Image (tube, rainbow over the protein chains, first blue to last red):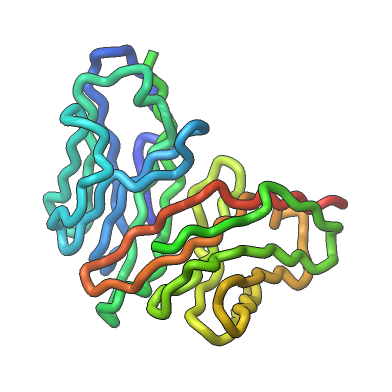
Length: 117
Length: 112
């Protein structure tokens, strides 16, 4: 398996522009997570999905952020409008929890480094 | 989920064992101990997890004290590629999926 795939790997945009980050989870995984990493706040969970349904979006910073998972093999994280403080590395991760007890291992993608000027 | 405490940094000589401690004194009976690491500019990577018993896999060993208030991740023969930030995470297993809450971790530097 190719692992979790994220695109683009780097994105530079100007304040006010719309940014869309993409993620393809590992085939067969039923959980998908979006994380953000900054020097100030470290790694923080933004939102996660189970079977394409958003379960917990309490980490989404504000209404400018939205995430969708239209099918089991694709998810997007959109920022509109983008601001300089959104500059960070955004990671997508996926997992499979066949036991249903939450001891799943999360597999992370390489991340998208976003710079908002 | 229980809070964890790790030293901010550690050094280890190449070829020697690296022992990374983690304190989780408020851990509950249904909380697992997980270890992830993040090599510079890469996404976090799962290493190992355990509940009560010691665990070993191809990457590392996890030693959990009998009272479960602390644990140690052991890399038996550290290499330069093991230089990374190591995160100890304690979390409850949940049927509706679960979150990983990353702290600041330990920066392990393996020296030649």
